[in-house]
Image 1 (cartoon, rainbow, N blue to C red):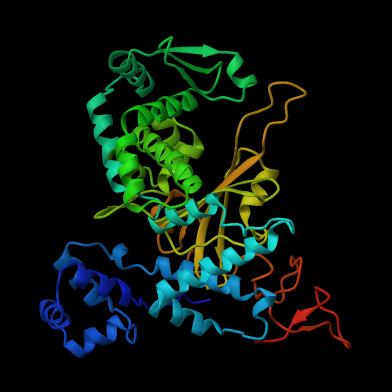
Image 2 (spheres, rainbow, N blue to C red; image 1 turned 30 degrees about the horizontal axis):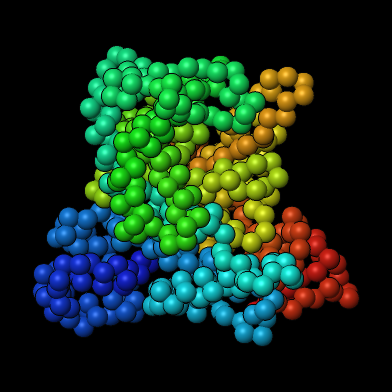
Length: 469
């Protein structure tokens, strides 16, 4: 299958850039050397943005090509496809081309429509005795908010990096530097308590005794992260509150969850400071195991940090990152590229993240193609700890990190793969309800919104097929 070059329609970002710079269409057209009518066509998405003009815009306004990516539109289109698969829309089918046009020309209207549909869906699930309709879950609201920021929060990230330089751990392990800082600035001592695990706590501050209690015999990378969390809570709460007041979710519960998320974000950025981490990631070709050993952190901490490398002018590879359990429940989901998780139903069983459960601790590499024809390199592995006793039931967790095939050669995981030969690329979908792959033998239920034909004269790999739209 030959690789096709995707056209870049960047009308929304062009218009946003022009207004940000306080320019009229005529003034911007003059600065980048094109006609007024051509710029007007670009802003209306009647014409794609050519590579030559993209380079000119980046040089003139000190931007990178990633700033003009159509990631947000891709996520919107995927959400529209899944939403329109609901049987409630069976009498008002919307072709894919129309969804694409709507996402490009009316992104705010699409956002409002999707929010309305989410509210409608939650309302259907409410108890019949409930008088008030349910609002969208705070967890989902925070996830959408983080996604809008591409999982990168510049002020907090820079604050964490500056704090790391202030600590200057040098030859010492960062954990020792954090312990010294907590003792020197806050008068807090660290005590490991065997009772913490039985209480379901990962840390607790006793202000009266000036003591931080941590679980007994936990991995050092967990201790490092928890200490960074505590410092973030003690010293960055004002900055976190500023971010939330300015642009955070409005719902109280969503705000509180967002506060927890930002505290965790600061902790991850502190133990893996942006500049140092990005430099090593490039040097090591994004080898997660090498990065884990170099920084003395966990596999999950490296994966999560790799999904945040979107600092303007100093971007790393745009990764998506998902963490899920063996039942397919998604525990974390962030995406800095076009990939979008299934919003309804479970993830596709053909995804290599599920194969990872059959080979614990081993990395699974896969090339996959989503229904929008984008191809990704996926790296999956299980994480977690072994049981401490026969009665212990440790949670089985796996995660997958993925990047666009165009970025794959920058990683060690592309070694031995033929990026031009797509015959072994695995087709994955957004969940059976919204997936239009009719010949898939892994389908668990019919695609919604289309007429089914069970076939009187032939039987296929599944006992039904959907007629073409």
